[in-house]
Each structure stands twice: as structure tokens, then as C-alpha cells.
Length: 640
Image (tube, one colour):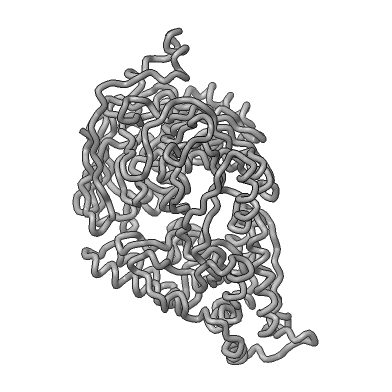
């Protein structure tokens, strides 16, 4: 039997899962010829001693059959990483009910949220056939995290409690332990993330690029051939499991990348040593190959409507639904609408760390942020862009969260131009130019450039509507589409005045889930990227937070980790939401917008309804795409 997670359910939202072992395993047809020729061991020798058994009960799915291809569209060659997200092989992972369960691990023992003993599956192998052992965890801890040439900032923040790293121990070949002085409730969710914390590496592969293990002459030659400065750059280039850009790097994912970027077409093939099977003894994944084609985001809806993708959500927005639904009548695909869990479909982020001192001061004035929010006609935006089906209001929790309160979404989010104008007058922004635009303290007109990732027209359409109502308070709005990476770099550097992005990732939280999205914790938070960077780098870069309310959020976030009861964590959550609501650090527009999911009619085991979310969720990941299969010609709803 699979070892059970022994964790505090009330505080961490952890579930235990056990399933019966199948009586036997059957060879995968894709590998039959290689096995017969002696180039690959038989399936029984490729699987762990105790494989993970796929769970089908309770979500309308059933055992499938091997074979076929899955075609996807992505907007950039860097999106090859999405196969790591979709494949969703994690040490522990969320199931479709957002409970944490063992996956790569056979089990986890947790004591007082500070001692975590991880049990590997004996016989589990990397995609190249080498055993996964405790040494792969030791290599990460000692030779990557412990090597200051590779990791200058030391352990990631999720591995620190009160600034201190854990004690790492190898107990035996398949068991490791991390022990902290205090509780670390962030550890397991980080392992289960869409972009997970990788605390292991294929040591047998990477040692050839590490100065401590490699032959000096061979390593120097490899550095020269790779055209990099030193062995550290070479090691980092060869070691990035999430980026998925090194086809030679062994993986534990269901499909293995065979294409070296940059490319316009990536081919993934099934991992012969994958650790999951179904209850009939078939090794997963069911689908043999995944083909990812790169296409401009602007043409994705048309390509999907023409049947060029078997499973597509990326590059599609709610406004594409009518076109796709019409196209599905002549195509071999269905269009589903999944729920989303973001706190806002579209949100504005005034940059409190803007480099321009005048803009920084203005963005930090809560009256300015409140005025901008009050001058948005969310009802009009909802009707025009979302057919009146969205939830209007702040970037906060959704009704499905037990912590949700209606007033949190409505405060400072009503359309009230008179109140907005009074707030701007109160700040002292009473002078205007000939066009009626208010002037900043240094005499410049208040012309806000809201920068977007430029990946679709949804955000610019919303900004166009906001532009019209902001003019009525003497503020002029421009939009500047760019690219995702460019937008982030500019925000991190303080070059943006305002950025446009989606809202908080998880609007369906419970008190047992981390509230770190509501406090400065990472530079990815576009309202305070330099404060977040300061936390991420443990003070090595960025700026220390110097605003009282944001400092209180940091203190509350730390207190949540130490809280011993669900009641105390609930109280902390309430206060953190209250501060964010009052301070309007981000300006939410609408939420609850459905996500179109297009799927070929012969693709089985994909839920017709689901929750489409980055983390937790990994988009399709929690629904285990390794269990999706091709059923031949279009079948009945039951077969789907």
C-alpha cells in the first residue's frame, strides 16, 4: 500500500490517498519493439517497486488505452515549459479537490509542521533509466544550494524559517529529512506548485558540469564549446527542469522533450520510466506523443477554430467563445467554459516602487489609488466586454472561498466620479492644463501609461473603457502593449508607472492556505516589485519596505506561519484582506470570467467543467493529463 501523508488536515488542507496495487502490468505498445530488441527493459523493470496508481473514481473518468498524439499551440518557444506545468509530476501534488497527495513520493511524514521525512519509491528511475535516490536530493542541497558560486543568495525563501535553513539528512537510499527550528507550512505547497520548488536534481547527469566532480580538462572543453564564461554558467544552462529547454536533462515528467530550442515545433515523447500506472496495470501516460507548435497569440483563436489544436486554453479569452462555438459546429472539437479562480480577470497595478520620484509619491498616496478605482465604471465594462456575466469589484477573494465577504469586493469599487474628484482635490491636484488634465506637483499632466503584456486585446479593450471615465476626473490613460518578459523587467526596474495583469492567483483560499499573495513577498507582485525582491533575495537587492500598512502585511504574513490554530489564521487572513481592501494596492475590475477550453471530441478524461487556475491548479495539471487518451472517432458524451 502507498504510504499515507500524516499531516494536520485542518491547518494545511492535506488529504491521504491509498489505492490497491494491480495484479500485473502490461507492456506499452509504443516501447514493445525496443523491449523486444533489448534496447529497453520490460515495463515491470522500468516501474518503481510501488508505482503511483491513477485515481479515476469521482470525476467521470475511466481507464483508457495507449496511443495517439496530442497537438497544442503555444505563443513562444519559451512556453515549452508549459509541458512541465501540464504534466504535473510533483513530489506531492494537488488533486482535483485541491488536497495535497503523494505523487513522486511514496509518502511524507510530518511532525509539528517542522520535521518533514520524504519517502521515495524504490526502483523509481529518471527518464534515462538511472535510479532516483536520496543522492539526487543531497546534490541539490550540498552542491547547488550549498555552492555560493551557483547560488549566491543561498536557499530559497520557502526553505527558510526565521531566516534559518533546515537541517538536511539522508536517512537511507530512499529517505531524506528536512528539519526546521519552527513550523514551515510553505514547504509542501511549494513542492506542489505550478512552477515547483525542485529540491532534487539528476546528479548523475549534472556532475559532469560541476567543478567538484568533473574532469578539469573535459569541463574546460565543455565550457568552450558552449560559449559561456565559466563552469557555473554551463551548469546553470544545462540544469533548469522548469524551463524544459535541455532535451538531454533527465526528467520525471510524463513526456520528454526531444527538441532543442529555439524552434517552431517541439515534439515530446512518453517517458519510458514514468512512475504512474492505471488500475489495470497500464503505464501512463496514455498518449504517446505531444506536438507543440508555436504561433502568434493573435492568430491562435483562428488556428484553434480551424482544428489545429487538440487541447487549447492558452491564447484564448472569453471573447473568443462565440467564434469558437460557431466553428465547433463544423469542426471536430467541443468548447467548454471552465471557472477561474483569479481574484480579478484584469487588474491595474500602480507601481509603488516607481523610479520616478513624483510618480512614486503619487502612487503611494492611498487617496490617489482610491480615486482611480472609484472612477472606473465596472458595470459598463462588464456589459460591454463580458456580457454582464462577470463579478464586478476589487481584486480579492471569490464567493467560493470561506473567507469571502461581499464588502471586501465592493469597498472603493463603486462608480463615483464626484468622490473621486474630491479625493484628487484633497491631495492638492487642483491645477489643470487646457485639455482639463490635472497637473502633478512638478507641472506635468497626469498621463498614466498602463503597460500590458500585449498577448491579447482583452486588456486594451478594458483600458479603452477606463480611459473614457478617467478623463472625467482629469486623468489621461494610455495603454502600451509590449511583451510579457519586457513588462516584467520594466516593472522590476521601476520603469513602469502602472502595469496591467490578472489578479491574485487563488481567490478560493481557505485559512489554512498561505496569504503571501497579500503581502510583499516576491518581485512578481507588480504593485511593489522591489519590496518583494528584497524579501526574495534576503536583503541582497531590491528595497526594504518602508510603508506602515505594507510592513503590517509582512508581519501578519509571518504571524500566519506561526499560528497554531485555524481560528488564529482566520483572524490574520481577515486583517490582511481588510488592509488590501482599504489600501487599494491593486485595482481590480471584474472577476469570475469563464475560460474557454477547446478539446478534440475524441479526447477522453478531460472534465467538461473544471477550475482553470495557475497555482494551485497548474491549469490542466490537477486533472492529470497523463490520464487523457484518444478514443478514435467522436463518441458519445459518456465516452468523453
